[in-house]
Length: 184
Image (tube, rainbow, N blue to C red):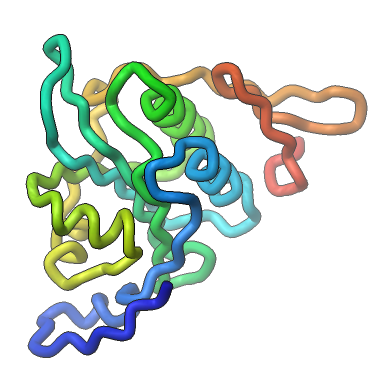
């Protein structure tokens, strides 16, 4: 779903390198988005950094119930981005379990994590549902702060295990085969 929009008067020259990001996962679906993040994090191509984008929403039982997507910088190649859409959330359901697993994987793999909280649902949905990176969203991504590990404190433990000659990552209740990038 490449974006063919022509943007005029964009001050940030970097924008044009990232303006048509890749898209892995399925909006609103946790497992395809977790699988996309596993593929990215265990690939031989290491991302420069990852930005977690949260859409601020209602509070449930005193905790935020935000929708979450990830923007992967310089993956699979330099000066290119990849969107993993909103299959995650800061709630106690499947999206929260997926977010805990992915945060654990990011920490385990040592990829720098940044975070930005949005209050504009339309801007969030453009990126999450359409894969469209507009200049305003790009500016928000570039202004992200280092992630606070207290924002969503349910982070899954990750273990690398061997079974016979095969290596796996165990993350929460999920097990993912390693296909070479992280075998040790």
